[in-house]
Amino acid sequence: MKNIVIIGAGISGLYIANLLSQNSNYKITIYEKNSSVNLEKGYGIQLSVNSIKLLNQINFQKISVEDKFHPHKLDFYSLKNNKKICDLNISMFNSTDRKYTTLQRSTLINFLKDGLHENIIYYNKKVTKINEEAENKEVSFEDGSSVKCDYLIISDGTFSKTKSLIANKEIKPKYFNSIALRATIDRDAVKGINPENISLFLGSNLHSVLYPINSKGQFNFISILRKKLNTKELSDYSLFESKDFTASIISEISRQVAPEIIKNLRNIKCFPIFVSSDVYEPKNQNTFLIGDAFFALPPTFAQGASQSIEVAHELYKNLENENIQFNSERVKRIKMIDMKSKLNYFAFHLSNPLIIWIRNLIMQKLVKNEKFINSYLGKIYKD
Figure 1 (spheres, rainbow, N blue to C red):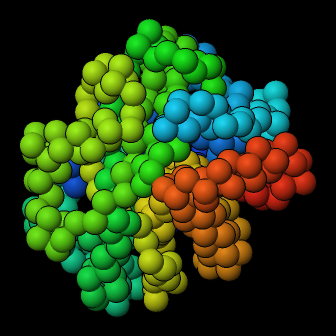
Figure 2 (cartoon, rainbow, N blue to C red):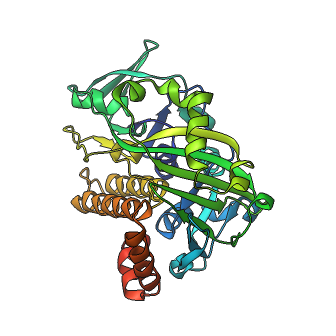
Figure 3 (cartoon, rainbow, N blue to C red):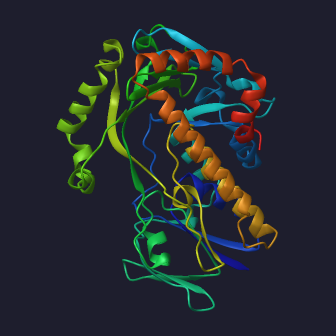
């Protein structure tokens, strides 16, 4: 029996644990640094059909229809005049059992957690040392305990401390010169949009997204603001929990976002966006990175959760086939999505009126061009 240790109980770690638990040849244990799995309610995620196909392997389709939503289109609006620019049919890649899905992050986390035995997850476990020299790896924790394993799967997020430990150097993500403000809002407070779709509002150095996260009238709101921060600000993470800082971000966003939206936002939180600069490949052949520890993407293609699921599934397939090397195509794929995410970010944040007019004209043509859509989206959603 192979002993597998997973560091981090996020989407990627929980998903691969569900897959591995189907094979009695594996003994799986998850170690989570926090005192519980993050079940913060309200905030949403988007899952494109490429990840729904993989989640269905562990019965994701059984989640109640009330707890998820299937938007038909992505509607683009101008923040300057609130006029609709165009729309993109994201349901064109759907099939009977695979549909573009939005839902609360906590709904997905609960589903993944409930698929595991209770004794699989150990909490308050902060990794302090990893010995990869011995035949079996040894992972040591802050509380003085340790565990040996055949395979080590690192899934502890964008700021992965474990990745730095195995690399014997500090690996830091890069600040994306952007602040995200996320919140929840009720359907009754959202006017002038089609509530069956995802609404994307393009502004100057700013874009906002509104979408339903279930069939109960709850919506997710996120606004991405281009903003540079100095080293001192970035080192003080408590700054982003400060009411004054949040108020300043709301003030900046409210210059473009409609007042009726701003005043009805609830559960508001601000956080800086960090991304990966490159893919780090562990030297030890039985150590693997998945999720945001593998690669953290900009949020402008809504592929963060989907790629966490994809990478975890690819590792699972490799382990099942006794192929301990990630396919080089996986690295190519994540870099392709990263490039498209950055291109979206650039296009969404234009400020020159003439360039914006040209962008809108191009978008109106491209969203109706089936060949372009199959190339730009299909290579991600269908593969």
